[in-house]
Length: 138
Image 1 (tube, rainbow, N blue to C red):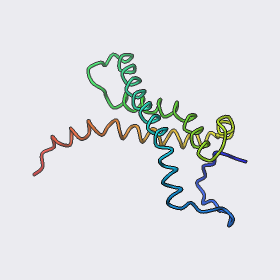
Image 2 (cartoon, rainbow, N blue to C red):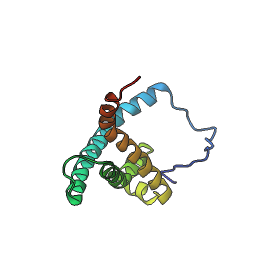
Image 3 (cartoon, rainbow, N blue to C red):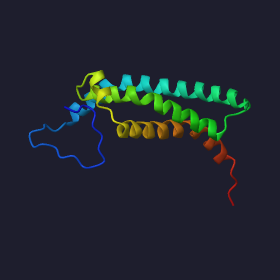
Image 4 (cartoon, rainbow, N blue to C red):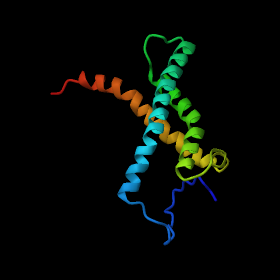
């Protein structure tokens, strides 16, 4: 049994698989919400701390720049991949070690790309919003 499966092809669902109804989907989301909240909160704190460390290393302590924002989000995305793979596996009924053993480079890369884009969009939303407010229109 492969517990963590991410495919870019359309999967065939066997006819005997039960379909998830609204109630199961909703209760599953409620059960996952605390874990997801902890993961996202930890990622945001880690991203901020990593960005500050990168700024100290580069000697640019005045304000965050684009490369430090991007590098810190990539670093946090990479570190987040294994725990998220475990969480995804657990939502499918697999054990933690089973999920990690079945995690491929392609799957980890997809997780890193998704988490990096998510964290980067969160990180640049405030500075980008402030910049957009200063743009003069006609």
